[in-house]
Image 1 (cartoon, rainbow, N blue to C red):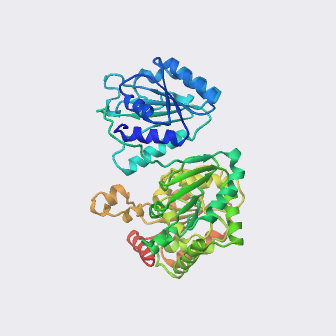
Image 2 (cartoon, rainbow, N blue to C red):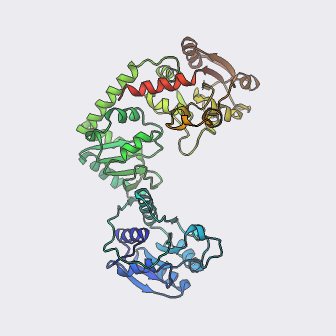
Image 3 (spheres, one colour):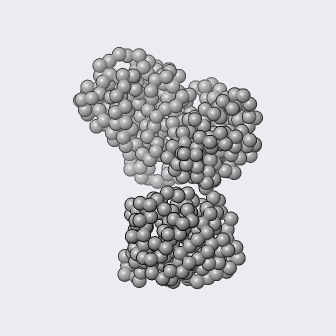
Length: 510
């Protein structure tokens, strides 16, 4: 019988799944549930060592001899700190020692409770990965616990630390078997050349494969998910994810229905965006994408063709839809006219409109940033190229980052398309927020500011548009004019009209 603690059982199951069969265990009450599981598991051999300082070196020696990871399990408090010398040695020897420490609940840390100290990251730079597990209360927390353990255990080039908070009661052992846990496999860069062909074969052999590229491009996928609704025939069974951020929450929810995901990225990072990751391949995603495109040209895949037809139909609907004067009309017209110019979109509504109307990749600070720095990023980009560089940006993003224009480095190749509707328009789209009296003034930050004065003081050539004809003429001016100074077109629109037009566009896919 195994412990009743879910995080302990998930950990035990994944230790076995990752081929770990030896554990050095130290005495203690807080880690008793972990030690019990390790001893109960037939796939793991336990070795008792009382002194934690010695136990760490025992595990190091076993790892050297076995050439495989070895667990050292300690209780809470200073027991963990006694492993420091052995862990530091393992770090410089690149030995895979897996430190498993039991911990007190977070709310009791620094409250003069016995054997409590901040244990996450206690081993500092001498571990290659440190995670602290949740005590799961729902499926999302179980997924998180599983993912953290996988992230730690796929690291094989040095010690890692898995911290396990455990609440009382500690000693309940009534679970009959360990859970079947998802294992995430990892292929390092030195083996990726062989694996790339295997990844392509997996894609081509799947019944319903899908190749997903995140930033800078996942155009029209949000509209596609709206159109297919709950049609299971469009749900992939194998997703090959090229990494990068995905703007659409709707698309992410849809891809979480897939059976499994393989991710390819240069860093070999675990990015479990769709909550069904099974393989991480460290390599160049563009190489994989090119191989798959080549294979599809020789042997078209029916599921890929099914999606190509769907996306083509959606593109036709988007192109046929003529939005009234609004931010949607601005972005649609700009994308029709811009050709192959370099374009950066700011966050919030700007990038969402690009997802609908852009036909080619665009830049966006979508990794972690909000509205800050969008204009500065484009300004910096324009300083090191002679090509025209365009920025499509909303009013809050622009005014927040207006100091991007306050320098002597800018030239006439910087072109700014500012969409100003007097507020953070995206907040009008959030269901339920309309019930708050604080929405417009405090959340969406309504204002009456324009960019004209900012442009004058920073020697930026300024032009304004307040209707469809002026907007189209302004975009043409922005694209064609030669200038020694940056150009800015400010398009003033009405926030309610922007919201309605955006919703009207989405409604044609329902």
